[in-house]
Image (cartoon, rainbow, N blue to C red):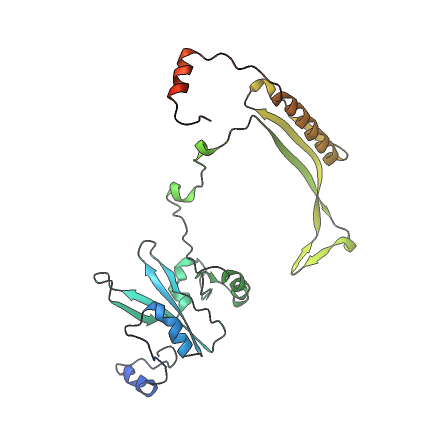
Length: 272
């Protein structure tokens, strides 16, 4: 009611709503209204859509409790669901008058922002948020939690599951060099608001073979000259033939020692 019929700030402002007491259809709703009943409220009041936010203690941020599927209604109201820490069953809705101010901690921008009702991300212009929303609403409401820059375990990404890797007997490490060549006027491509002005032209490459067996490793093959992609293809195909010949060579297994026999008999899992 406070969102639909803003009242002046005074001690008796609740009396201002008595004239609108029956303007909302609440037939079939039970009070206090649970979040799962809001779709019924929206069905009973076809000019109103409602989103519900809640405060999440673990992340010290806000999360979307309910996102209305109705996007073209005359009135949209954002509510914040408050919960009594000592009594979780005591909950209360308050109107979010300024969503930009509520989530201002999510940006360093010094000014009013335009907030997406689905992910609560603040944008600096209405145009940008309008372009963002069609992609965002394809997914369920989400809360973006940024890592703590003071905590290395949160802000540094490391691969630690080395035990899950599959060892490779051979692989090629390759790197290309290229020049950025400007396109001719008639070749320029324009797509949406972006224009293609140049193209990468490969000028050379470096490639060398890595193997778990040091004797099969090769020094880097470096090439810079005409038609580098054809030269690269020919080099890789030659490497393929050499490697295939090596791995297809059958070598008899060396006799197992007595200790290896004991380990084999006692094993319950296959060893990589």
